[in-house]
Length: 104
Image (cartoon, rainbow, N blue to C red):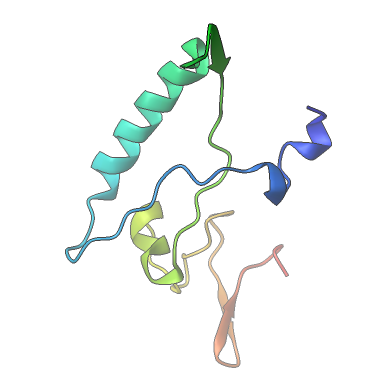
């Protein structure tokens, strides 16, 4: 697959969905997921199809999570002055929104 095609939505597969009534423990969930994916990235997922064995290797490139839980997952203060996940700069309040230098 061409590099420019790897990150297109048509080529992505949803591999998990977590829905529960209690607050999830992200550290536990993500650490175990990363360990599993590291192993599978090296050895691949093995499937038997008729007489053939197919090996598929994958890589996690994205994490889709709702905004309310983004801060908890990244261990940041969501919406706070230091809530940017791309930098460590203090945000500036402009109107009713916080903007981070270099991002806008």
